[in-house]
Structure formats: structure tokens, C-alpha cells
Image (cartoon, rainbow, N blue to C red; front, side, top):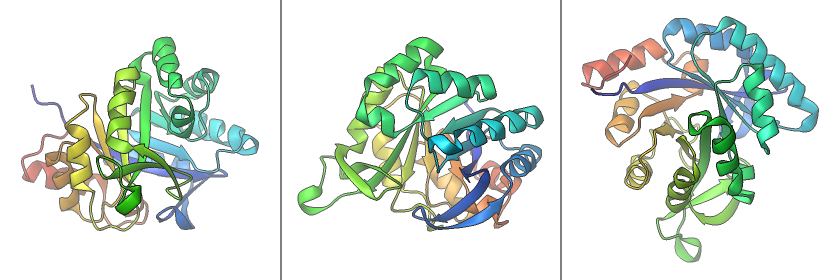
Length: 256
């Protein structure tokens, strides 16, 4: 049986509001997260991802409240990431109504966290978010892609393809691969990066960064993505989840 490709709107939440920019800069307000999530649920989204971009301890309760209120109204799976540093953070988000939790920076600092979360809650709960950019010259990694932090502004020197492979081995249930070069540009997903990561991991792979036209989603699925994620094109009305699914079906991609 062919597994359906999922379409996932992503909501970057800062102090209780959805924001979006280009390459994580020049953020502008995109609305109330609960209202947007409910709209995407109605439009046929397969899942919804929240990323807490403030992720400071002072804003943490705001995010828990957003998750609680969304879970009461929305019936598709919710993934929540941003500032998750411990299994206790995961526990609180799951209790608030999240179905899956995204981990990024804390796992880079301490990869053992991936195994701890998988052992306690199961791999299906854990999504490893990889913010990757292309490297050249002296900074080039073996694969040509580097893991970054701080919205792509800080390099780690870690090979992104090798990191995705290791994380899957440690227990990550999915890999959310975000191209920092393409993020917010609407020029399309980084298909080469997707294909390279797909070649080394067997867990589901989520494509993120660069969607700007309905045909971009089909291209990502053909490059190996099990799910396609986008933000601004949905938030600001450039296209709907339904339009994306219609195009993918017409292109022969199985969707729900």
C-alpha cells in the first residue's frame, strides 16, 4: 500500500502570535495561531506544526496555552517544537495536547537527549528538526550541507546528512529538514538536499523551506519527502492546502 504524502502548514509562534519572514528575519504578523490552525484543519491539513520562535522561559506558558486551545478545536496531529531541552519539556507539551514534539538545538548539544525521549515516549513522538545550509570552500562538510542554529545564523560544522542519519539511529521518529538557504524565498524546496538525506534515513522525511508554487510540493515528494511543510504561502493566501493536494493528485502523488 502506498503511504499518502502529508501536507503540513507550519506556524512560527512568537509571544502568542504567528509570524513569518525570509530566512528567519524581518518577521511580520500572520495572525492568531489557534484561528489559523482551525482554518487549516478545515482545509484538509494532515498535521499542523507549531514552532515557538521566542522559546524563552518567560514565553513558555504562552505556548502551552496556544497548544491547549488548539488541541480543543483541531483534530489533526499537532507537532510542537522550539526550546525543548529535556524529557520533562516533552512531557508538558504532550500533556498540553501535542501529539509530537520537535527537538533541534538541545539535541545538537547533547545527542543522548534523542534516545532519552524515544525511550520514554516512543520514537513516534520525536521529530528532529534540522536547519541546514549549503557549505563551500574551507567550511564545506562532506555532504556539502551544514547543521545550523539560531535561525540559520550560526554554523555548527556538523554535516547535516550525517547528523540526520545518526539521529534516526538514536531514535528520532521523523526528520524535519529545513533548508535555511531556501526558507521564505518561495523559489522551491532544496531537492538535492532532500534526496541526499533520503538516501541515508528510512524514517519519514519532512521537506521544509522554499515552497512558493503548487508544483514545488510534487517535486519535493518525488525527491523523497514523505511530507511537505510550508508557512507563508498558506498564511498570506498565496495558495490553500486543498489546492496543493489537488495538484499533487493530478501529478500522480498519493495524498489523503
